[in-house]
Image 1 (cartoon, rainbow, N blue to C red):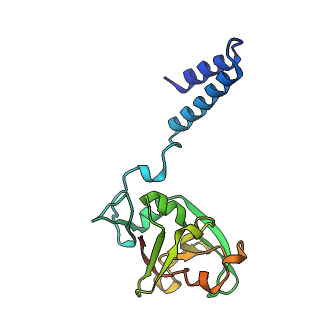
Image 2: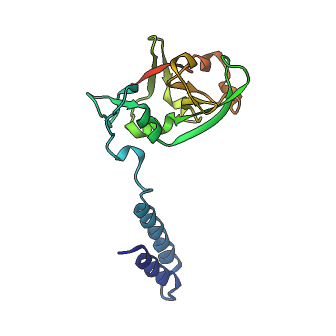
Length: 193
């Protein structure tokens, strides 16, 4: 059935005098969900198969995840990270002068993409620094897996290729030593527990 046919069918139902208000409302709700499904908006990010990286892996996600592309883990090269929805935040950090614009993938989008099911995330840097982060507390904030600072791709010497950036300026309650310790730069892997 085409979108036009669906619309016509439900429009007729909505304009008909024999239909009750509840029937019309139910028809409109079904129409909305049908249109969203036809547009591809009804599927969660994690529903599609995760492609294999073609370049050097910059981030691996392991542990309690449903979507993998390599030996029980999800590996992301730069191209795969960029294929996920991108977000920008402007914030200062204790390690930079003034506010900067960071761009990357929201942690929540990454966790949804791999079907993460744990309660704690261990963030591990290239130098093996690691910190265990309770996921419940982070779900209320737009935490960014930043790959760009001020429009430039971050290199290892610039805290890249991936840096966990908290929106400190927008959420002052995050601007504490405890939260600063979770802002792992040179991030290499996330282990969901």
